Length: 379
Ligand code: SF4
Image (cartoon, rainbow, N blue to C red):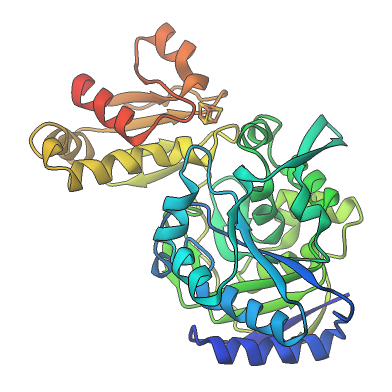
């Protein structure tokens, strides 16, 4: 197989549709006889497209316009946002509710769809029936760095189809190998990468938007991911799940490239901790993204909710700028060898917090309100 590349600098739907037409010709894509499609962008959380955290709606729109032109009429946009998040809120914030309404396309959460039990390496897993039954599954990932998986592209984006419980399990199984096993369950038929503006640094939820200008299309998930990783300055072999996918025969790490796109060395995510001022979020690969993001939710509440202005906000300012705040999540969280206050998030850290006498926020994942309430009281 091969990967089609093109430089695109602006989110203009007609421009992206034209690139898709060229990709279809170059890759010799045959969509004849296909009637139904599921389009899966990366909608991990409710952030504006400008944040570069979510797939830009213009790229998803272009995919839908392109599919309709090819005679595919029954199209659904679907994703399962991060654990504990309200899908409707995520869809609204990321601009997808408006997009779906404008295009008259159903927008559904994988969290609400019926699943079929499938056997995989680790026992049983639920795969959405719709994902298995459609004629064409189009994975539309974002080009981003990631604190645990180095990069998130189509194979990582595919994880959004899991139920909330299976997502948690995924992290506890070590993430990289389960990602590959999930890709085998229902590989995408087509991958369209939004790397027009990528995200570097503290991805997948924070980090810095970067005008990378990359647009890529392939019929093979691994091959697209390997080509995109190279454009972002990474050797695919250093991205554990891509290396394993290569060993498992999901494609080649050195695909044929049709066309070209700019290269840019993305700043990688610090794999030990994420840091904003004196607030350190220590990484543990068993931690789910939404446990990691819970603190950010509480910071938003401290800024936006007047009830927190005199209770929580000054405490966060003190610990974030003058003191030092350490945030731990995940089953394998370790106490940092540094001074400051330590706050443990979620049920995975409950025993550790009790044993060590640390601040603990309950929940799985904790809600932003729960984090704010605990920090107001304990800091
Ligand atoms: S407590 Fe957090 S890290 Fe642990 S399973 Fe729940 S959401 Fe995941």
